[in-house]
Length: 638
Image (cartoon, rainbow, N blue to C red; front, side, top):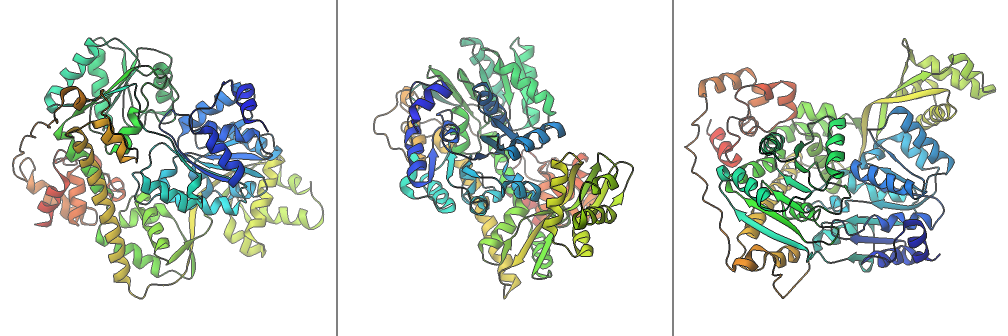
């Protein structure tokens, strides 16, 4: 099929952008490809166009709901059948997407990685022909990348299990090592990795050292002295987004905040308000911008230091996608460093938590299932970190994860149960009737413990799931699920529990050290004695000899230095010691370990703190502007 003809007739583009043709050729010739393109360079076309070339559905895996919405709107405007399945859909929208998938009408289906935890979804996909399995944000598969997500490690096996005919991995931010990890993880030949350049000649990159108490004035000066244009101001904390937007509004600028703490509808309103204007300003956390396709962004300011060079590259990449001159400026402030470092420290579990988790897992039979929520609260480990720990146990060769399942199915009949059974004959009618007999009947919904029902009926669990799916397809019932359980089996049991705890501890320590190092790399870019643009693209494996001429160093020809941070008073100055000790004593399970206490004082949430409602306590975050390592050292002294 003529690729260029599809490009012109179905997408309205005259020619391919750099790398796109090569990716499509690799898919055609090898059935696999990696696309590493900078933000806004046209990665999505690398699966949108192939979706029209082959029979079957193209399954696009992405954590970015905003990307899904925008791309689906574009595809539908071109007459291409596309849909998404995610938690934001109404029941009616979800049923419509499922029906399009079952009928074979869909050409592209967008889902989040977590969708593969849904046995109902997997059962449907096993019966569909998957022409292409596309994984966006593929750098998340790398354990040592900047945004490791354990679910991504399992996507390669999922693609194989679903018999996907082709695999495509895409990312905007990958170092050479991470590209190797992606190729290895998805079994993609290295010669099928297409990496285009990261250099953006139309971006003027400023790095401006500034003291914290001067940032507001500096930001206002920039906005007042430059031509108005669509602007993003990135901040670290939600409360900073609110404060900066309010400050700008009072100064007469069209500004609004955007962060994950806002309601979905309000975030959508702010996003639409900003997208539809060529001069509006959004003060946002990194929750903003992912997957948003706006070409004419003229300014991107980093009010706070970004957490890594990967994040910085992705965020400034949202400026000037139309090729026109644009300005990105980073306000480099030493006071930001503790906050960024503390996020990394907050993810590391306590030794006590790891010990309890491992002891619990080792007490299980050869095959078992667990609730991540229950384990998270019991051992005070965030769920993402808990999933990472379980993934580490897989990588160490102790566990193997099987398909997750739901312990409970809720069934809402659209007609009396006996009428539903009456639609079938013989054994099938008796089976449907028996399923309803196993369920607890409420006012509107039946609740079915599907594991117990399968055991009582001496049937395979999969038959019950397929039967319920079929009833929903036939519009006989509405289904809902609850109590997600993750299934595991032992590959081998460790000879020493202490060795496992030590191995996990070392891995988490290494991750913590890496995240701290990423913060320091941002500071090093600011103080780079040489072209900063060249240093940034070199981090991603692109080498340039000539200075860019449009970064701060190229303009002033000398390295920048961050203003010295004010030396804070010695710990525990500013803390009501007696009140804190009393609180520790009354909540020892939550605050008894030094790392738990340090997290509380630095304002870092954890499952145990949430359950105990201590994040509302007056002392929570008493040391939020201090370095976690210093607070932890003080807590360890007792």
